[in-house]
Image 1 (cartoon, protein in one colour):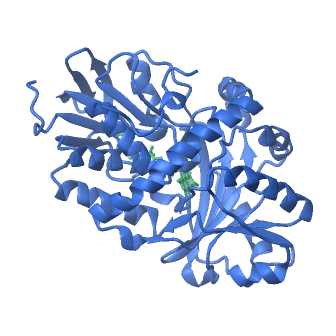
Image 2 (cartoon, protein in one colour; image 1 turned 180 degrees about the vertical axis):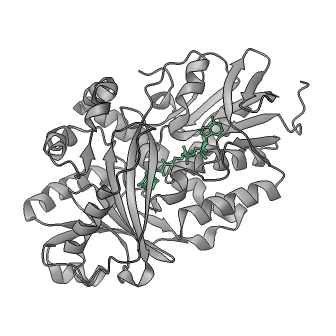
Image 3 (cartoon, protein in one colour; image 1 turned 135 degrees about the vertical axis):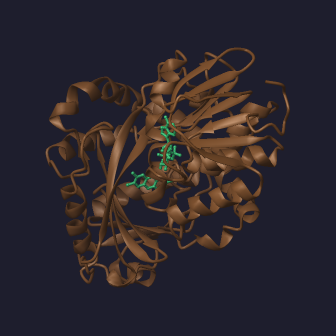
Length: 419
Ligand SMILES: Cc1cc2nc3c(=O)[nH]c(=O)nc-3n(C[C@H](O)[C@H](O)[C@H](O)COP(=O)(O)OP(=O)(O)OC[C@H]3O[C@@H](n4cnc5c(N)ncnc54)[C@H](O)[C@@H]3O)c2cc1C
């Protein structure tokens, strides 16, 4: 293939989730010819039904000294915030061991710095992305309220905010229910204190947003194709992708952005990356279910409550159960029940349930990196709980890796070979 910046197969991105689509837009902006290929279509997986948060203040990796203390307690509740189905426990054990090792104080602090850099870049670049794609109207800076059931937890939370403040994030601590009610009326008596931050936004609906970005990608000259990529081969000159229907695509560069399904393609190139999935559940209730003014986080329960344009979305939880197991929607029901304690007036009928596969590395940082096998292949996956939030920054880094030149932040912490 000759090197022609406008060639349809200048760059092929595998995966049309939020990472693949935003990377495609960033590459088009740099004048590259981009084809995105997805086995199902735009935002068919995790990017469609997530909690809609641009959680910029959420800079601490989940692999943290605090979670190591909390997690064993959670594991005793089969429908609690964290579960490992017994049939998957052997399979997930090496990942859990690496998670445990990543939760040391020093690794946690280094991870927080890396994550804060990626958050800052993502926040900085989001306005431009939205202006260029006509999606600005979908973003709401309505903040986030962390609701506490005990003063002891609240004091612990305030300490965590001291760390966030070092990176410029501000929380307003509300130490009594009357203050809390000014930000969100109608909460239960269990809420004794809260912290409110404006460093957090929500999108009207993550699926609508991804579809709008997909439309903008095509309008700007990008090509969207349907196809399942089964194999990849790369050398110094080109990348060849083989599809399940027998087709082969040749490209100057390829980006692997298949979310939780990225591992087989990395393995085919010889890169061993311990990618797993943290399955998450939610229920989207009609808008009339509750007058929700901000995103609400019931601290310590592993789920969140999001205000969407046409609904209230309640969910989260982590199920370390792999890609094949059927969803267990009792988990979504359990979170709905918990939510009623926080919002006694919540109407829980008429909901739509969903399960999604978060792509997750054991240190809970993404992979944004060239493949070790070939500098022509770039990886962008493993964003866990934060793929929507970190998408615009990740896209700029992926585009920078393909086009060459200096990158905005240090991407060493996101290297594919760090494990
Ligand atoms: C319950 C829940 C709540 C969440 N809430 C938030 C939140 O509020 N904020 C936030 O920032 N993040 C949130 N996340 C995380 C976020 O949704 C993910 O990190 C993000 O969507 C990952 O995007 P992605 O593009 O990497 O993967 P995906 O969206 O999963 O996309 C991967 C794409 O690759 C395609 N694909 C896979 N294999 C192949 C193949 N071989 N060939 C062709 N195509 C292929 C798939 O069809 C899919 O379209 C949440 C996740 C869950 C589950």
